[in-house]
Length: 383
Length: 92
Image 1 (tube, each protein chain N blue to C red):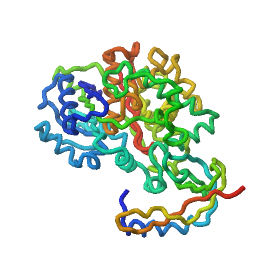
Image 2: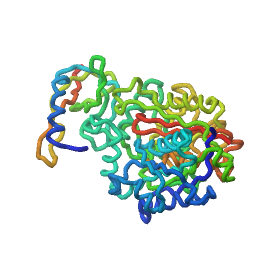
Image 3: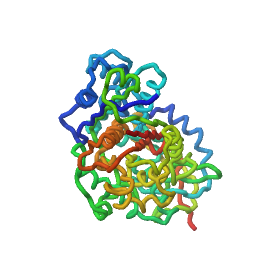
Image 4: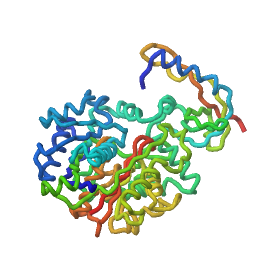
């Protein structure tokens, strides 16, 4: 069975003081329905990717809230997998359609983060880490700093090498009106920004973001029957897991869950890394993008940062990475990120990406990570 | 993080397994505004996430450490003082 991406929508990402969680839900779903050219009554099921509504918005019963907003009574499921909640919602919706239980599903990713202050949001995000890591003063920048230190030491690299990721992603964000930070930065600005956790600086880290995204998926049978919008297909959706604690991992220079999910995804799509035109990868911190492009099989281990250049990973390069601006510059509303990646991939495959369009995009990979690598979801979209 | 006397009590059961144990730092960082370094220490064949304390030297990967009893936190709702094991840098 082929699964089509019929409609997509992304809200503006940023510090959206004038929008509530309900506003973001409503705008995302309405925008997606309009893009899909369907009626609300066509929706057979909904999946919601969200991590923090119970901690930040006093709302744990999101399925019911969405039912109220839409005035719909179809099955609605909230999926939580930390920052991979959006990707996991996609994965679950795909499996529901493949199983034949439903013919279509609307997937919503949404997060309202800025109602919490920075201390509260740091604590809330640490619910995605191991209890012992929290007890010993760790934060997520701290956990990724451990990975960065280990990686740089093992491969003889420095903070300058990994800083190439945020510089590239900010360059791409200039061409994305929905991005939180649509402006360029320099390597020197990254290196001069305040230190957060050695060796990571503020501009190595993705921001706190409000935002929502939605996609409408349907079986090819349903698409043909309803003469719905088609042309983009989710050719693979795979996920893998690993220990919640970094200290229990086999290696600190790779994320095993990414490697395993990508192997499954390439197999499902019958494609290899060289077939991927461009990718949206999980750059929550600069080191995360370097690990991702290696673990996804694009580049050899230890060499990833050398390919974050104009010839390879920038727009116009051989394999552009994070044309949306990534988590760093487009923003990271945690539960929405995995769904936003599908929106960007679809825009690329529809040739609707305006100033950031990748030439002849044929296969786009999305990669969404939960925690410090405890969950990984890899999707491949084709046209 | 949820705190309760029962949680503290359960954690205490494991303290003696780490006290006075010698290990080696395999990854380390310093989170801004934190009093200690944070890292991963290898003890026997096990890796653990922990705080690393050092009075004046900057700890590095490969340095030897030993488990010592220290206050973990005390400003909690129950006014209980929680102790835990942190790792202290050993002199070369």
